[in-house]
Structure formats: structure tokens, C-alpha cells
Length: 174
Image (cartoon, rainbow, N blue to C red; front, side, top):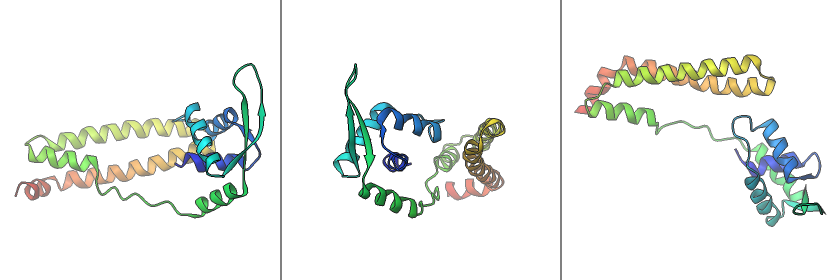
């Protein structure tokens, strides 16, 4: 996820302080990974340097001055271009799991047990996501669906690999 573009998009509704940006980010996108304040301010500093935001106001307070940021026309254009650009699908051609299976076969370890352990872990995570989906709002449901579909594809791959394990063992040992 592009933190900079996300913060720019949040600024399109109007100027905000860094604290407000962090709160809005966490509310919409940070359920599993809240944004750190330092990341907000370093990102805003970079966006300011690049002319994508400007300081709309500076307020003095008991602590450090509070800057209120506003998106510039260049920032709006940058967000529009980012939103229009499709994300590159991730084909997972260098899977860690595949590497572990091949290494297990090469070293005489039980690759079937590795697959069973991984299947159990996938199912555990899927149960947790399904429960979260049941009790979540629409955004949470969509995020969980995305993860569940990927995990389902992984489970299909685990089953396929288990069915072909003897052939794979023969192929990697020759």
C-alpha cells in the first residue's frame, strides 16, 4: 500500500493535522497495521518537499506547533494517476513454501508433514478471518474476503502439491 497516496487521498476531503490523518488512516485501513506517528510526519514532510501538499495553517499549542496540511493541485493529479493505474498482480513464482518443500525433499525430511502443518495453519487463519468477517463492517468483510480467497487458492495448491509429492521428489532428486 502506498502510504503517501493514501494520505493524499484522505486530504482531498479537506485540510487535516497529522494526528487527524493518522486517525483517519487507522480507521479506514489500519485495523491490522496502525500507522505510526513518525511515519505520518516523515511521509508528510516528503509530500511537502515534492509539492504534493502544503502547510495550510500552523497552530501554536502547549506542545510543538501543529501543522495543518492541504493537498495541492499536483497532489490531486498524483492521486488520480495512482488510482487509475492497475496494481500488478502478484504471481508468487518464488514462494517460500515451495522452497521449503523442495528443501525438505532434498534433505530427506517429511515434506508431507510440512504440507499438513501448513494446511492446518491456513485453516486456523481462515477460521479467524471468517469470524472477523461475521462481526465486521462492510470494509472489514471485503478485506477478509480478499485474504480468504488468497488462502483458498493456497489450500488448493497445497492439495495439488500433496497429490504430486512423489513425482516432485523424483524430479528434485535426479
